[in-house]
Length: 259
Ligand code: 6AU
Image 1 (cartoon, protein in one colour):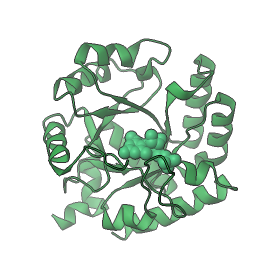
Image 2 (cartoon, rainbow, N blue to C red):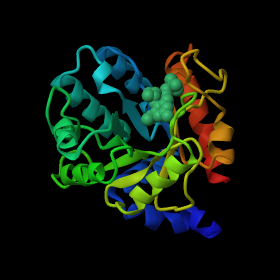
Image 3 (cartoon, rainbow, N blue to C red):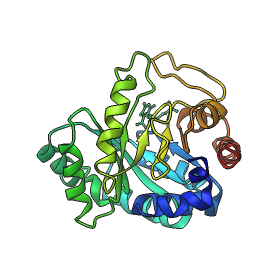
């Protein structure tokens, strides 16, 4: 199973999934396994940040529901930037409802996520029907190509214990055409067909005083076995986001390649 983790062997397995094929292409082309969480509330600020760091990321993650002035022009500019810099657009919506509601949340309202996001986060708590509904929308050939199932959360006291992660993995194994990978702390599986994305990374601080738990890039990739680091404030609130993004990307990529 060790050789399955070799990139040459793993590549065709990942490429079976359209979203993972896109992510892997950007990762290898740009030599980065960094996803930046741009948790800003103003579209101009978000676009400026993406413009400056876009060259160092394989994905940009957004919480669209915190943007005060979210509109179609923001979506258009974001999409243009994603093509120019070559990154995946990630909507961290954390869907967690019954199938019909989830289909409406992906396609309607002021956010209509499936029209602009390539990947969305999904909670496993509602069970398998949520994945069938996400698949129904993926099949409509909008921007949305895949989803990441939340196997565990980074916040202190999260209820996502080992049993929960295991059950999330079973759900994903039965729906590989929907689930491209996981949001996790420790990699919940040794299956190389999935990509393992991890938040909770900060080289300077271990908590934000609001329950977030951060660890180093090295722990996230080597000890915990993840593929992609999701980094927010360590980059966006630093004195020099461009320098820090470049540094996190190069360190994370070296650790990933040498694992
Ligand atoms: O580095 P930070 O703490 O500034 O940002 C981390 C980002 C935030 C969170 O909403 C998100 O990652 N996140 C998630 C995701 C990606 O789903 C899960 C989790 O367990 N913890 C977490 O922080 O945008």
